[in-house]
Image (cartoon, rainbow, N blue to C red; front, side, top):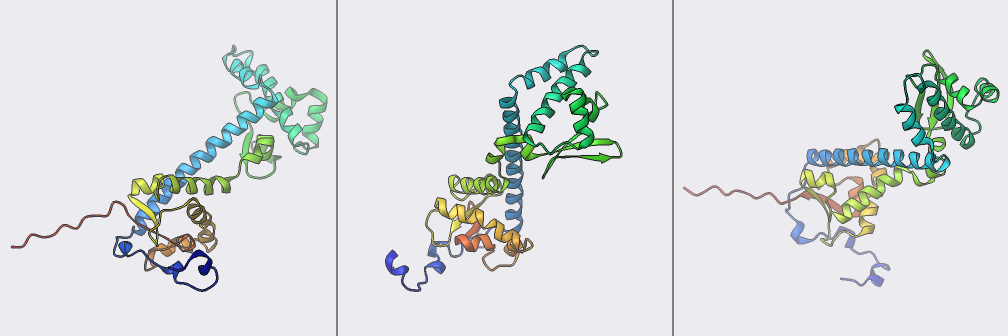
Length: 264
């Protein structure tokens, strides 16, 4: 086989060289691959939510170390005292948000804040003591008018503050599939449950770079209106775009045994 230096100087068949032991090995069906991917997506979703909640809580704790303790105290307080306590905690919460995003408040909300303070602003936006007019959205934070009243939409940047720099959904997606594939030797949690495995066509073990390239290649498969994923249903070796990028195939694992019919 040509050396590494020679392979960089001339065209070789290396990208298409297939390990002889791999020939004839059963491929994972499209259904198995879909099931494995759905399981992994669910796990990535859980990771994303847990990290979002954790970083958000940490960011507010760093801004106001007593915020969550006082919230627990408000919940445990006598019913008559709860509205005032909730308004105090909610006002402090809004104050942190306004510092992070000065353009959050409209003129009406700004006038309430200037005239009555953070607690008054919280009561203004949440007139019902047992209901909170807050929603988390992707994008900028703002106050919107709804049939139910004025609702405060909170974006991730305002919620997480400086912690938002550590939160990137695309990075988490690629990191999950890279680490899970490499540490599982071709099997993510989903592939383990679906009994499938990613292998290199040339038979060599998967490297971190292989797993990273394959995980990053998901974006290429998605960019083709998802046809890059669906290609596993008709490609001769059931290769998707990200499989061809990494030089991999997905096979059944373990290899199913073939029962021989006894001669009669």
